[in-house]
Length: 203
Image (cartoon, rainbow, N blue to C red; front, side):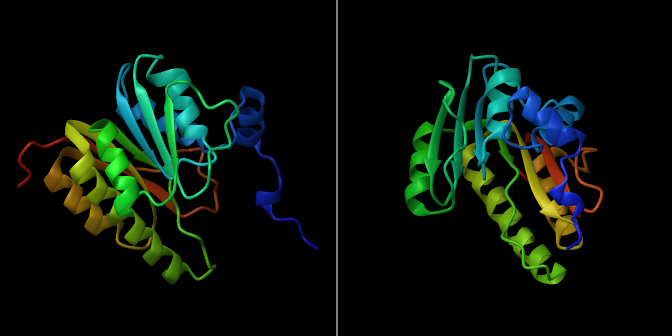
């Protein structure tokens, strides 16, 4: 049976293992942070779709510097042992009434980050549609949970509605852009939508 490139550990996977991160996705956030300065020391951060926990752990270790707080939510539990003291984690649907109430109680947030992706089917049209819906839900969550002047990062599959969502972000944020980090696999069609400086009164 042929071996997929995804079955082989690339340099990012090996580096993540050496540095104690559950997944190679940490280096996507690192590049986004270096380019856009999404998170600052002392910030309150919401990580949507956080499991297994690489983004949460990177924020804890490198960005908030022990002065802020991270709220991590995913359908699956974090794969961090131990969970850092700056982290409050919820297992469940971030968009459900119950979880949103708990997020609200701990918010609002200086930054919302999301590396969430839908379960894929192999049908690109179906997968991009699901990713677009998920990205829309994260943006709506940011409407209610993100502070004015806060920053937002959302993953979305290319080929779907990313341009429409980017246009919406440009109405709500002082700056909005796309960024595809070098750490994304060469055969991946994911990219990231970034909203900087949430407006007080969106046009």
